[in-house]
Image 1: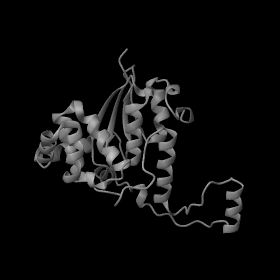
Image 2: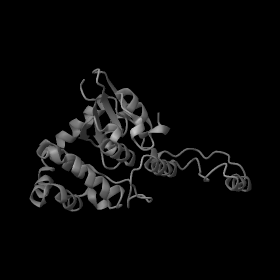
Image 3: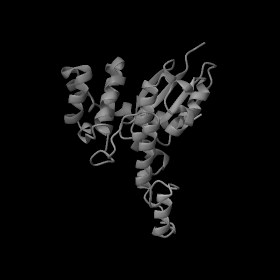
Image 4: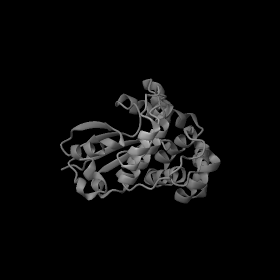
Length: 248
C-alpha cells in the first residue's frame, strides 16, 4: 500500500502552523507519512479569502459577573483565569500555549517582539531553498521556526536575520545566494503561485493540510485541533504520540 501523504503549507509567522509543523515532523504518529512543505504567505491567503486574522478581531464586550463572584470561582477552581471576551488576541495566546503543551512542542511563553511580523522576505527565501536545496528545506524551516517561536528573535524575517540562521543548515555561501535569489522575479512569482495553490485547495488560514490516504483518497484539514481527524483519515496510530488521546 502507498504511504500516506501530507502537504503542509508553511509561513513562519503563524504559531499554530509551527505547532502543526513540529508535530508532523517529529511525532512518531506521522513517521510513515511522506510530507511536503510548501512556503506560502499567510497574509496573501487572508487577503485572497477576505478573512480577518484572529489577532485583529475585536468583539463587543459581554456583560460579566461581578469581580467578587469571578474571584470565588477562581478560588474554587471552577475557572482557571479571567479573560475579557473582547480580547481575542489574548485568547489566541492562551490557545497556542495550551496546544503546544498538550502536543509537546517547545514555544516561547511571550510573543515574539513586534508580533505580528511581516514575513514576505523570509518566505521568499524558503522558496529558494525549496528549489535549490530541497533536501535541506525541513532543516531550514526547523531553524527559522526555532528562532522566531522559541528564541523570540523577530529579526529572522529580514535577510540580515535569516541568512545567519540558514547558514547553520546550508552553509554561508549558499545562504548568501539564497538571499540574493529571493529578490528575483522568478521567486517572487513562486511565492505568489504557492499561495494561490493553497487558496485553490480551500485554505483560508494556517495550518492547512492536504492529506492523501493509502486508498488514494484526498481531503484537506485546517487547524491544530483537527490533527486527530488527520490521524483518523490517514489510518495512523494516534496512541504513538503525545496528546493525541485528547484529539481522537
